Length: 277
Ligand code: ZN
Image 1: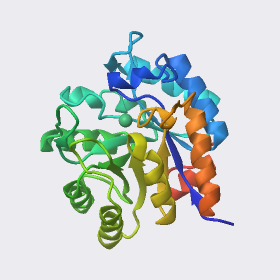
Image 2: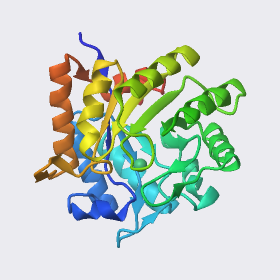
Image 3: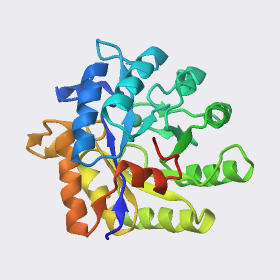
């Protein structure tokens, strides 16, 4: 049996520019349908933001509640991860939906620059979000935009602000943050293994670099992420018609690399999450 790989699908981001692809799901119903197609195509983890009907990003717990309910019904066993990052600057309300107990939530353990603004995650906010995740049994996915964020996450496990084993996502290709660089990715992986040998990781590439990070991560033994949040194109000439089309593309890359998509239950085991009934 080849080495199973968790495919994350990031269905809907929070940046208005993504709307130049009409396939980005906005309403809860569209999000559930898009996730279901992606689940059938081989994704085992869904990363979620929610929007108002007019497309404005929100962290409205009621939207998250309806989304979680739909996903649990239509994608049994799939790992549901809520984003706490989509409304940078909004403060503690970014964690206002964690009481709904999704399986996971994203947690950026530091600040950096984004294309047109600061992605601000001050120490008190990080601690507050981590506390909420601990209290609600929500596993964090550490969003590593920079090396210091990896060290911060390890320190938080050592000081019992987070429960291990860690799952880190290395994000490359966001303008003004970490560019796509193979040597740096290898250094991240090596450093993570040295500091937290039981940790798992995913590589995420933004825009045209999505497939580059998928290929590198498959080769280096990591997990992968795709979806319209990060990239709206199948190739430079073609808009992706759906999240599932991007998942299909990722599955092809798994085949080429001699790995296979993990089932939802396998993904749960790999991430040390309870196996769903
Ligand atoms: Zn996101």
